Image (cartoon, rainbow, N blue to C red; front, side):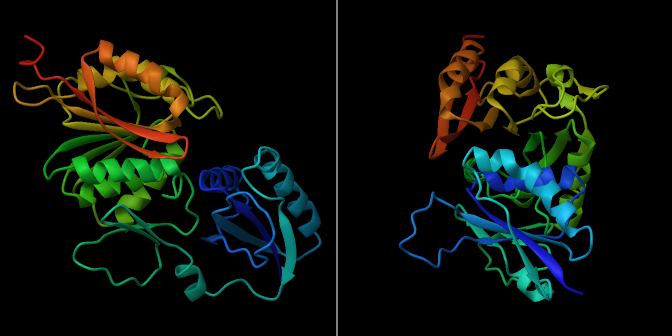
Length: 324
């Protein structure tokens, strides 16, 4: 049987958008990602980072399905995040071995992201994060995820109690657990909750990660944070003085709305205040975030940047420094 190979080149940030659109529309789970290479060195292109390929049967419906997928992904192409969707007839799909080695991605000093089937021999210093081949809902290739992992690597210590808000693929929850902390992973989207559960099981960290559908504080009233279909009846998690650290890779406007809920949920002792790691936005949100969090008694203690993307670490000032 022959197949239609559909492929396009993407920027770093577009990988998750492509995979999420495909997954939400039940197009295919047979998605393969490899680093972009340009055979024609004289051809001028944007900064493409990856090539995404996926396959549909070469049957009488192939033209219809191909056109539907092209239309689905067209907005990303129009905004310069991907190339046009290319189509070609191939005799076979890639072998399992080729797929397993299609992605080995290093982040920070310790983290190595690999596909679930990759036979990878790690060193004692490396922390392996295994994700499904489809890589939907957080591949680890988006700049916001990379920046979050870099900050987590510096600030997580064993036996911390951590909240991963908007857990998505579960990649951050798994990373936190492998750094020795305990995690409550929350997401208001049930599909993301199932993806997080899969990642937790795949990586063998079930004893350290609790996965729930829900949101912190007023986040349950804000609908779908990424602008998708509205989400109703999302359980509200109302906690106080519970977490040493909160990480949230979500839109900037949601961080601002939840700032008081972060403050309430974080532990604040005489010796140290809780930490929140904010990601999921570009630098045009920095000033508004600084105002919102400074007014609530936070101070900026760390940051990471990649192009226009930024991740910020804010620490809640301890009671002693606040004069309480």
